[in-house]
Image (cartoon, rainbow, N blue to C red):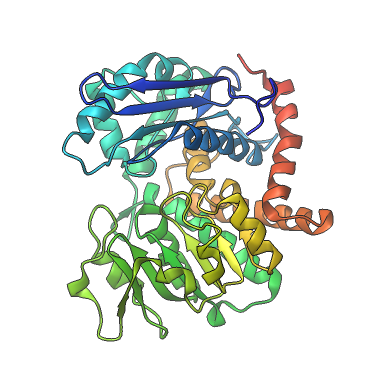
Length: 397
């Protein structure tokens, strides 16, 4: 990451838990009207560099969804991270103390929510214990009618579709739409396309569901226990019904034709589309050689290392980048809060599909015109929009 004044993060700090010695991080990449946006992740091995990269990604995600005619005004990018296994018995206490330490930032500058390793319910519970009224309260002064906006968002989080919360579905809807847009552009029929998904948590599970319902055959899924594969196609709904709170599938529920393979087998699945939807850095310079898919669609944040992406591009594998692909989870919060959409599933899915179609198409057209990768194209689009946003709204309010 560049360290020039224009590109360096605005705030970068490391916190050490006085009880366990574990560390946490906050990076505010930039502010718009004095506020930034970005989730909080918890995973063993989380680093400051990782959080800084994610914060820069959030800056770009916000800029890419800028609509001069919309009520939602993009915020700056930020990210929080805690180096702790979320299943550790001490994890919740660490989370509460982290949020208590970050309380001044959350109250005034940083809006946050669930990310890898944490659910929104857990974040909200810990935030209340840490003395926070909300993890997005910094944005409230920017709203025309705070009471109505908060009620609208609360109502949206209460919406369920087929027994699953709308908030758990919009991100996967966006990822799936990016896949479908790429297939349409290449003239590939959905019914002849196969996909493999790494991770069956919130994002991966919803992505698998929307792709399956669109007609794609899901031939492999991976969780912490390994890969489940079936060249004839997996029963996605059955697998989702058999997963626990961490996205791990109960193997006793597998169908007779399902094969249990090692964890990395999803990479070499005979599929046109790979969807890494779990951890960062999943595809490296070594294991990328196993990939035969035509597209890698980044539902997770930073799952493909830059050096691996160069090798993949050289042999014709296209990576659709996280800054576009998984951006609708964040955008949905703000579309709803600012009032571009109501607390309604049909409105949410329609807006998500329309926005992702437009953004994916713009990115791929730009990549083709510039003779570059989709990621470079997305970064170029964001770089053009950031000065416009800064000039119109200012960094500090």
